[in-house]
Image (cartoon, rainbow, N blue to C red; front, side):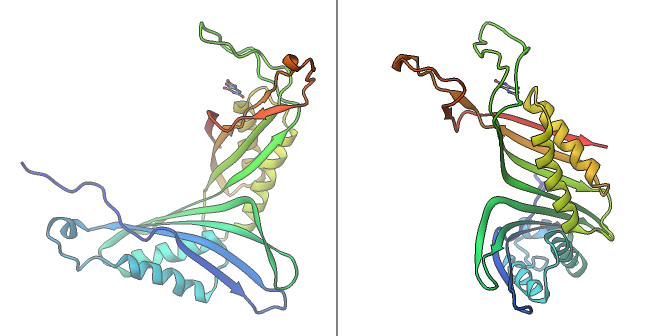
Length: 274
Ligand SMILES: O=c1[nH]c(=O)c2[nH]c(=O)[nH]c2[nH]1
């Protein structure tokens, strides 16, 4: 039977990289996890075992560290540099994807740092020949509001037991990925800060009738704050907080004591576009 090799790619996943900028008295840390993935004219390696067009994943890893020596402006810019390098210098490679996660470190003093556990910044750069596409975002941003959230008026069927909630706890862990409409002359750090701030403010400032409605408000706010962005995808787990029934103990529970369930959870996802 005649067969063929379909879509394929290869790369080095999760290169852990810490860069310390010691030029000023106050040092600065960049803590990244970088994954590369290359694709192109690679039929021969799969079909004939011919490795002539294969830049080793070990070399890809070394490139990440070598480029880091020169400097990292932002993860979006670093991803673009790397992805373009592989496509521009390897004749067999036509497409490169570089995905980067950045863990935040906050200064304690000039030389000591506290790891910021509140969120991870992310960027994915795709270079396809002369074309480049950049996605920025964040993950693990946990938000909660203790009131100004309801969920009622929903569809009911024979399996529906959920009581309508006129006032509930709303909590989520935001995963946001925003697409840039242009990539030249972008202040990547500024867009990250503005989008981050807009997401938090919209979550806090929106009276929520559902997490779906909150998702749209958050996406809209991020696009409003950042003209560079064309769309944003949000993935929002509904971190349910159930009021504990204390009546067996002869106690009331006027929205005070909750059971914070970790699973199952509702997962609300959507893309907001201009
Ligand atoms: O904001 C919500 N959206 C839903 O679709 C849903 N479904 C559910 O059980 N609780 C909630 N909450």
